[in-house]
Length: 435
Image (cartoon, rainbow, N blue to C red; front, side, top):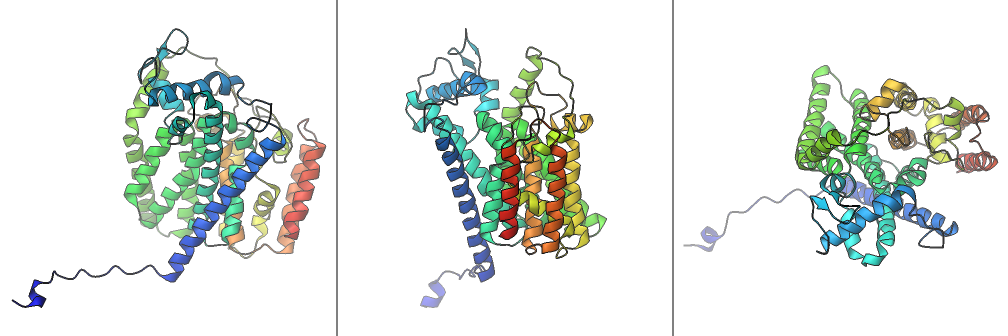
């Protein structure tokens, strides 16, 4: 028998990735890494300047963070190290004993939560802080990767816009003290990414897993992120696909991905929903929208209010969005669809029926604008849509600056507007236009 007859059959080689594809992947990784780096430096630098723990004497574990979330992570540490009094179903370390499974599903099922086991028991505060920083950086990286997936463009610009999303006012002011909400900040760009895969008919299994992880990590903000991702996909389908049948096929793939992902997360979600029905009823509140002057004031830095939407995502990002309708390098249809989506989501924050839809049809007892991170994400995606087509012309930038100036003038009637806010906004506009 000849040597040729003994040789195994030859398997055809896989085609090597094209140079353009390799370059795009490297650019995506570079943008994601840059976004994460900028975010970590900004968060840690800001806390160090403010002398907040762990950089100074001012402690951050107050209110719900100190009374609920840090103790929950301490109990998780005990569980992971085999020292807990109780188990997954019951926790004897809280009060006179309380059920633990609903708390686990609400606060501790994030993939990041188990990282607390790497720290000493006495440093749980530090562990939660590190997890918070890592979640914020992950959200920045995910957004930068999404932007480069939707449209090619400079990796550094995608990184900066990804960081502006992760460092939006909602993230810094509200979610940093509610670590489980940061899972929604991560979930929004990842769910939009699954929409891109459905649009292109790619990675169906990975898409289901992404949805399952997002809904398992924190179903509350994942629900909001899913609504926002559906709106983004709707605009993408209208702008990139023709014909009712083709569009319906994309929507069907996306809906199937979401349903299968939620089904995979059901072992965590079902106990949560059952326990919520049996829980002691909380306060009932009626939603009242904030004055528009307050809302426009929150577009600026150096403003604070617990019960108004912290929309600030960076003056440069806001300038790109305001200039988008006047950016003639893009087709008019593209400009108006994205500008219309930003406007529609902004208006939905102020209307009671859409407010209820964003919040699972129950006005929360705390901040009534917990869906603000979705608006911030859509603003960043719209800004990238314009920038990826080229730098806006001077006329478009001037028109965008005029729109922001009008919003700032309206905000002057709000007690939330500050001199620092106006000064920083003006400086940011000048720097962004000059750049």
